Amino acid sequence: MMKPLRLTIAVLAFSMASIVVAQPPGSKAPPAGPAPVNAEGRVVLGGKNPADKGIWTPVFGILEPISPYAGIPFQPWSKAVYDYRQTRELEPHTRCKASGAARQFLTPYGVEFLEMTELKQLYIFDIGGPHTFRTIYMDGRAHPTEWQPTNYGHSVGHWEGNALVVDTVGYNEEFWMDRRGLPHTNKLHTIERFNRTDKNTIDYRLTIDDTGAYTKTFEGGFKLRWNQGEELFEYVCQQANYATELMVGTGGSSVDRSSSIVP
Picture (cartoon, rainbow, N blue to C red):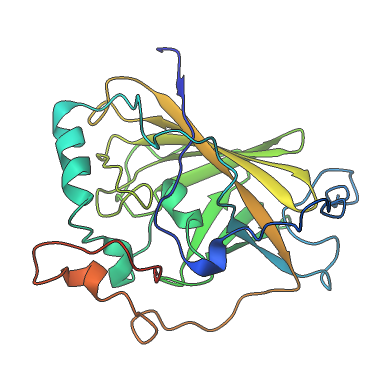
């Protein structure tokens, strides 16, 4: 396998709810403290106990100041699709469709992790958007040899120290991999690493292997922030959808990206 090209997935379109608030000059943010652990001493991706509630949202404003996708190993057709999507953001997510890979975590509403150790399964709940959940099998099973492609694909996971590692195949082609519109094919294979470095931070890294859309394997990533005290809430996607221009465009031909309102 070719050596991965390390990239940072940056997002240009985001809501005001997702902006990191700057600290006053000369002040320092309080220490985050260590990540909570379970009885075996392994980090958990939720609170330290059932009463310690919180959700994870993406951190914007602290990524490297580089062009978001400089150097991505596009094939000609996938680069053309990506370019097209920059002015015609007719994204399935705005129609309340589930989105796999990095796009699942790039919403202002965030996600919640729920590990069911007795079932040997872990769930990731989308709090807004399509309001769906993703299942990660933690029982050591392999991917099936045949599957029905889905938006989330088939995910198997394991722990490497304090990092959750998730291997996913079986994606369909009905979603965008991130908010900017990275295309993919049903050959997509992803490896995700969720490394909780302290109470307030998950370092999310994504390896993308798709020989149908890219010339080599590459990587990206960003950080997720713990929002203490917040939890899953009722959300009706279409009823609360204020991004109709992202569904049909302006006059059906182009999209104005200047609005801060996003699904």
